[in-house]
Length: 332
Ligand code: GCU
Image 1: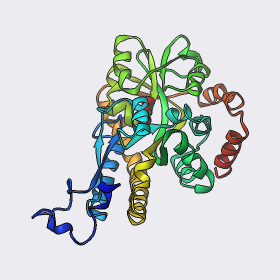
Image 2 (image 1 turned 30 degrees about the vertical axis):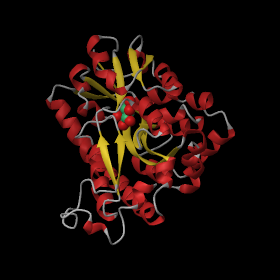
Image 3 (image 1 turned 180 degrees about the horizontal axis):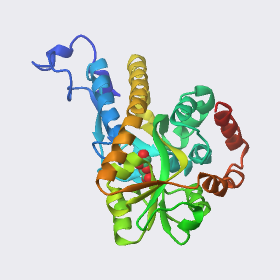
């Protein structure tokens, strides 16, 4: 609290000789929040967060800034979740699958068919009527506040052996999924054998043969180089995934009202910037993966849709899950 309070006001320029000219960097008395993510420097989420930091630092005169740690350097997402909860890290980007393990209502947005498109997804997660309670639901138990998110785009299956066209082609294949019961069941529905694993271990898993397949969007497929070891990318488009920005609740509460308003405004601009980048980065990733030897193919979309249809009855079981599903689908 004390840290955040002393950066502002008229005495700022006296703190150091070059403070008046220097727009960025660490200001004495300012709070630099550490943010953990598992993507590379060139991933659109890292790029958008770096520009979030620049705008936030400028708009708050360095009272608040963000140090972005990419590449899982602070830990994989499961660890990041713990660290944000205990306050050793201030913020993180985590996949919805991680939050599903803390509150099963988050599972609704990790379902295949929850979202028709990135725009649909963004309109749902930026509607406080739909997500207001969900996003504050972890504050009391975990000291985690959810602030919104970035799309993961459409996820598809890729593998080491050859193009797949139907669920039958995945029979016997070990398919890496995120750490989620829903996605484990999804792997089975897709015809494969699910293996939950952290993102950063997947490359080696595919390379060593522990895994035959994984599923992700084109941007991740390219940026973490999975295309090198699993060159057959089959467009199953089985779900539109979602990452969340989470922050330690006490850190958020320590912002002045004015700085919080600035933070919210710049974060909204960051989400918009991410959406704007997404399609272009996806096209670039496809071209670059192809240049590196990857092959993309279409699949029997209906066969996959049919295979996944049963997950709704199996996983949307509580009233609050059903209500969230209706609210999300109602706007589709
Ligand atoms: C995407 C997503 C990450 C997630 C990863 C995964 O890259 O953006 O948040 O961790 O998929 O499959 O684990």
